[in-house]
Image (cartoon, rainbow over all chains, first blue to last red; front, side, top):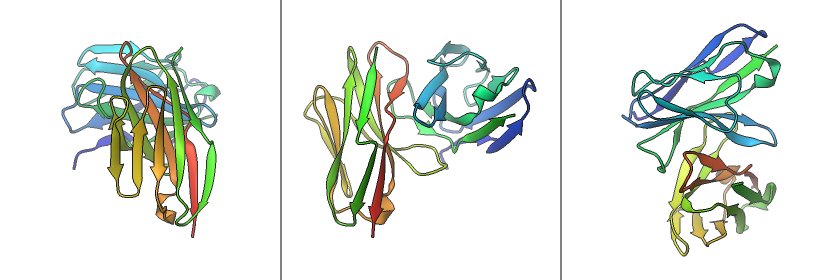
Length: 112
Length: 110
């Protein structure tokens, strides 16, 4: 089944403790992206990747890192999480830029 | 600055009561306009892509239309299972991201 898989589904952590949210797609897509969703603010892009080894900042990149060493994987790294990063995170992929995005099921992160 | 504005924020309908959701956008050049459906606690699910003014797409009870400044999602004779948040998003020609509106939360009562 074609899908975007994120893990974990739920995560509670404390301020400053490094964490990684994994994202993998099995559709051989070139484009991958991370979004966060907050009430009243909608979906905002954190980082995107046009293809392997090429990544760039979105609208809200501060406090986040990404890497795209393989086509299928695009992990989101929070080196030192803070409470304002408490949010619902979505990974998404598309065959290429400008095409429809397929979304993962989301990761609900709480930073205490 | 690119903007995508959806209205209304929330809409309550009775089963069978048709209505429309609006998405207005201001971008320097439109590459595509997308509609998604999002159920609580889940990722957005793709519905339609529209590329040029005058284009229309249909799927079951949903019909999406596009003008140069806005898009409408028409819902004909909705059912309770159509209850969800509907998101509009645009790809701008000079950007590398899909910019989302805040969504319309639709509730259809039986």
